[in-house]
Length: 298
Image 1 (tube, rainbow, N blue to C red):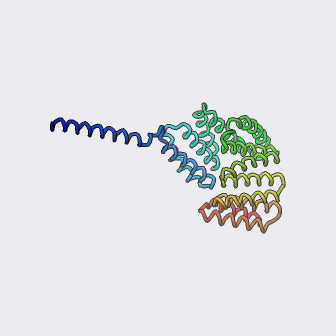
Image 2: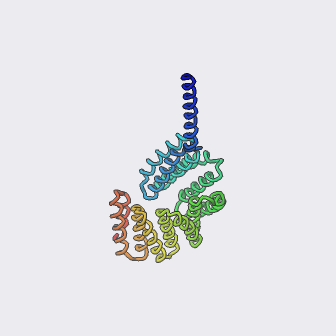
Image 3: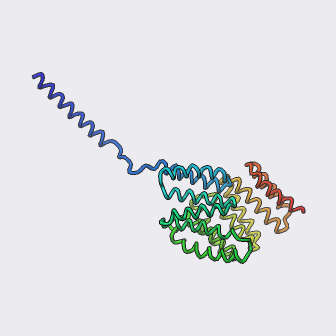
């Protein structure tokens, strides 16, 4: 009888254990279908690198992209590899290393060949560099800009569902229209880019849109309008605490005053730019502002 009780007790314990096991399984969270921790980290690195480049911290941007590249390679994510390379090419472009930028983008295009969005984006990036390879105000540069316009307009439909890539396309169109001397069309395109950046709260990019609009207005002789655009750029760069952008805004303000005979105001703007650049240890930029200041008196 005692043996029978022991067997019964053991059976009850086994049944209870099974019930607890099933209960714990039922209440446990479902295992994820995909792990995205490293992907998210890579995306954060790319975003941080883009922001650093917008602020003129190109060395910092490249360091961040090195880390993003490791994460993209380690997770074997083609889209991350492509986006990292697009950003890397942009940093080289901003540094004036256009051959290196094009080499990166050519390699990236080969990898993105089957991607319906990123392949067109690669071609838009490369189209931008085509304009700046040629001498300013040359017939060749205007002809190249016309070709760029045709190319980017063809690619617009492919990126229409990606707002930031659409903004990039409008920026390149604006730059190309400016080179062709169609200033009203250039400003309209840049304002399309601006609308996207404002809505998405990309403050540095919105400031740059206004900076480019100022350049278009200055080229067409609209100096008051150019100054108004630069005041908008200053506002966005201040909100973003973008010191590099602020310094460049003040240099542009000085340039326009210099064009219109406002020597005193131009000198004040160049001094302010120099102070800003020195406050963030951008000596080369500070010297550029000071060289403009010297030119006013020679």
